[in-house]
Structures are given as structure tokens and as C-alpha cells.
Length: 71
Image 1 (tube, rainbow, N blue to C red):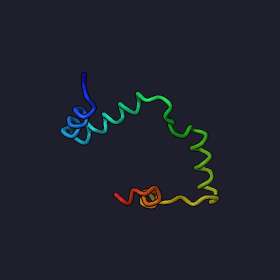
Image 2: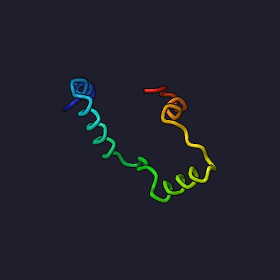
Image 3: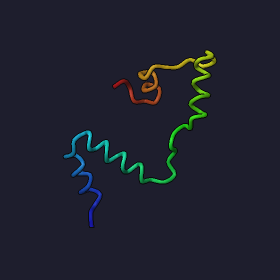
Image 4: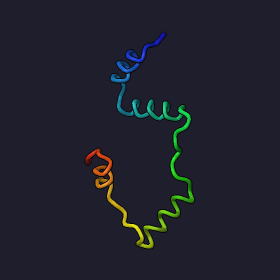
């Protein structure tokens, strides 16, 4: 039986690209996760930005607001 600690140790030896692939694989296999906005929501939000009713923020501002700082 494979232990979680063994898998975690092995993932440290993977390249960053392979780790990203592993994360995508694991997330794809999980149920109940939101898939993201649908086309209608994207269109609505784009229209809001185009009309000026909302002001978009930069990627750096977004990261700061979610507590991740700039990268």
C-alpha cells in the first residue's frame, strides 16, 4: 500500500511542469469543484467593464487582495 508521505516525497523530485500536471490531474478527478464561469458570466462581466460600471484591477492588485503578494 502506498503511503501519502511516500507520494509527497516523490513529488518533490518532479520538475515544476510535472508537478503542475499532477495537480491538474488530481483536481480533474475531484468532484464538487467549481468548473469556473460559464460563457454568459464572462460576457456579462466583460460588458460591465466595457460600460465602466466596474473598474478592472491589475493581476498584482488581485494577488495582493487574495493575500498572495506579487509574483
